[in-house]
Amino acid sequence: MTDTTPIPFLDLKAQQARIAPELRRRLDAVLAHCQFVLGPEVAELEAALAAFCGAAHCVAVSSGTDALQIALMAEGIGRGDAVFLPAFTYTATAEVPLVLGATPVFVDVDPATFQIDPAHLAGRIAQVRAAGRLRPRALIGVDLFGQPADWPALSAIAAREGLFTLDDLAQSFGCTLGNAPLGRAADATATSFFPSKPLGAYGDGGALFTESAERAALFRSLRTHGEGTTRYEVLRTGMNGRLDTLQAAVLLAKLTVFRDELAARERIARTYDTALAGAVVTPARVPDSTSAWAIYAILLPDAATRTHVQTTLSAAGVPTAIYYPRPLHLQPAYRDHHDGTALPVSEDLATRILALPIHPDLSDAAAARVCATLRAALGARSAAR
Ligand SMILES: *Cc1c(COP(=O)(O)O)cnc(C)c1O
Image (cartoon, rainbow, N blue to C red):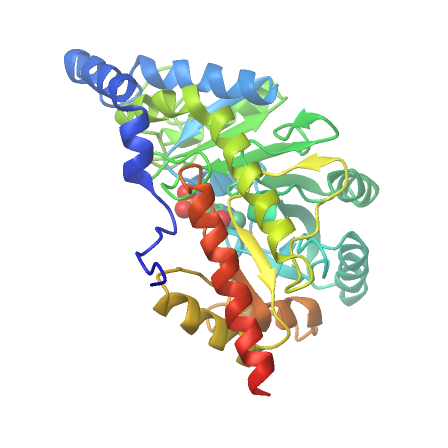
């Protein structure tokens, strides 16, 4: 009989069992000192994360979304400013400029790598300048699904156009570009420790990286209500954007196995690449990079095939997910802020993309079952036509 035991899309319990002693030790230390807000683990984590990606400064914050918001607040971005970002990303990337009164300008993505398309970005900046209604101010480049965006090309355009660059590394902490971990490619880098991200906490969390001491000081002030050198001196409008000490403790425990986990994800990705070659479009690799494999996304020929595959796999105990079923410029919350430009690649990907399970505790046998079930589903479908 075929095995239909459900395969977890993500297995946080298996991971917890692997790191249990270190996790316990870290949590007990916090329970002993009771400094739950900005306790010593937060500074220890900031130093460890900065060292991990070779960044000069790290400021731990309450979520990836708050990291993005603090970075734009520090830059004074608001009304009348155009913030360029990909249409094919998680909603938080577009939400933050709008919350600050700025206008998101959606850019299409590359059909092979799914990353923001530098050529289309250049065109969109020219379009905004020609319309003369908004000031081009910032670029949020998203490193989608674990892979880095084309930062050399993005940075060149931003430098030419005088744009502030913000790297949305929420999905891809741990990836490398040109042999260096990502974290200093932009003026500021924001990441997330949402539980399902490659490095996830047990709740919300995030971090900012920058090479600038002035920016880092601003980020620290903004995450604590815009405070000055003393707690009761308020220099600017800030927010409550701190990372909990308990989450820092969890992340310190998880960091001890993070490199091994990245290697395990890479091994599963290679298994998928080989076993699925010819059957589906497997993810194209960004040149000169390694992926953190937050998401392994395949492309199917059309929406009907995707529905068939997803239903068949689900019945066989193989979970899948759709990132993203609708590009942001077509979402009810954003379409009124969009200038109507067609973004055909993002629109097409949304109809055909499908994410397979990938996590460090996925066994080789489970990965093989995912591939065999997927191949069988596609075979049965083409035979039926
Ligand atoms: C998850 C995510 C965020 C937001 O992170 P949170 O920690 O959930 O606030 C931002 N951008 C992208 C691309 C994400 O995937």
